[in-house]
Length: 82
Image (cartoon, rainbow, N blue to C red; front, top):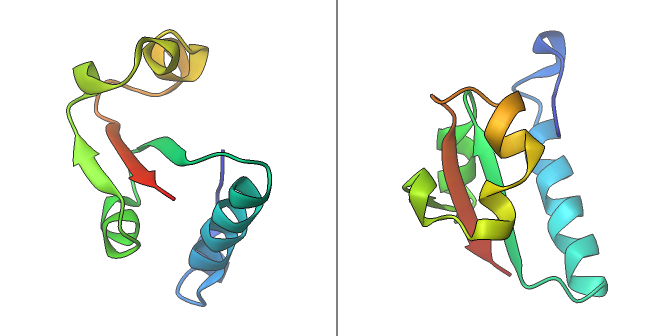
């Protein structure tokens, strides 16, 4: 999970964190990032993540505890090829 304290939002920290995750993922051979969000959909869309139906997530993602229990059903599922 990634989060930026409300007092430090609007400084580009969220985008920097996401860019770091993408760069690191590239170095270890990950080619697709999946996420759930309840608050940062617009930011992720600006960064090229596609909005998808939760049912479209791969089974390995849908079976994850984050997906099934920790994120509310209102969280949107997004992904991005990197």
